[in-house]
Image (tube, rainbow, N blue to C red):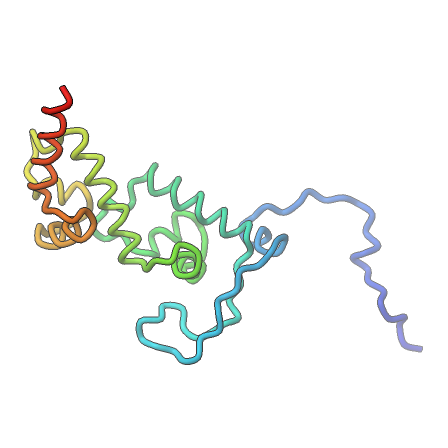
Length: 178
C-alpha cells in the first residue's frame, strides 16, 4: 500500500548537528525581507520586477556588517575600478543580494553608495590635513577618482561646497578654536 502520509526520515534523526551559519543558511533561519511588488520593469530598476527575491534578516545583518568591515579594512572604495562585483566577491555574497540590500534596506543605489564611501574617505583625509602636502587632484586619486571634475562634482553634491571652500572653512574653524 502507499507509505503513511506525514512521515519524514529527516525528523527521525536524533543526532544534533551544529547549526549552519553560512550566509546561505542564515537567510533560511529568520524573518524574511521581500522585494515589494513592482508593476512594470524599468531600465533604472537594478533588480527588475521579480518580486520573489527574499533575503533573511540575519543575512541582511551579515551583509551590512561585512560591507562595512571589508570596505574599511581593504579600502575597496579607493580603487578607481571598484564595482559591485568586487564587493560581492570580497564578502562572498551574490551581486543580486547586495543590490537588494542597497535598494530595499539602505535605500540607495550602487553609484550613491560608492560616492558616499569615497566622500567619507575625502573627509577623513582632509581632517588629517592632507591638503597641506597634497593637491586636490592627489586627494581625488587617493579617494578612487580618476578625474578631478567627477571628484569636484561629487564633493559639491555631498558636502554642499567645493573642496577648496571646505578646506578654507576647516582652517578657519581650527584657527578660531585655538
